Length: 385
Image (cartoon, rainbow, N blue to C red):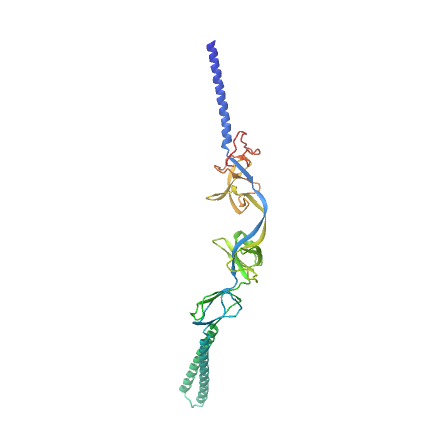
């Protein structure tokens, strides 16, 4: 009996061990099934209205600016304006030996008068010989000589007239004047210095009005129009805004930066704004309705472009290519590739492939009770979330 009882006991132990092994195997299979579904955090694609400010940065520039160069050679005999001076249009800035030009002009006038007298005499001679030729007294040769002399006198008179014009222009050029009202930004020469034609003498700038040149992004290019108001701020006056109006819009976008060049005119009667200042332009608010938004973490950059992982109703994922727009407060606009109500993976992208079953998790990493594929209560929260 003891041997039989011992055999029965051993059988029971073996059976119990087999049952425990089977139960353990079944439990492990269920556990593996849960582990095979990657844990992910999912968010909805939302449609929201958005107020976007059209802002840009640029530089203040003088509306009119000119480097005034000498048009004649000579010594500087007078300087009538200095750096920082306000000048009016036509005001004398500098003189390049006008006395010499006066003498040259007097000489040119004398030669012009002489040529004019010679021309009048040649005309009288031709008229007299034409009468004599008609009476048969003067020969054809004599008349041809007088007519040739008249042609020479006419050429000399034309040359003298041109020389007189050059002398008059030289006298005007000897007195260098401001081409427009503004300020002397720089003086490059001193009195007594000998200058050559083309040598820069002054830099003149106009400060009222002043221009702001800036660039707007390609997506905002259609929202800018001539006459549109611009609010301008500069660093020297951080709590103050200056009003401007758009005056120039470039006909083409910059192919390198994909931006549009714009100019705005700003009244500057008090001359507080100066060329070269960095400025910010605010062109107002653009109302954009029905934009699709996703969390920035949902959009991944791959070699073939931007993608997201979309979760379907059966908790399976698919790869979707998207085209994005603006970024705002942790969200990104989706222009193409998604629809309102789609659900996308925000965290847990690692190892995802098309058709893979995923396990949805809440923000704290615990299983999402509303998901189809819910992990058991004993599962540990996923630290990566």
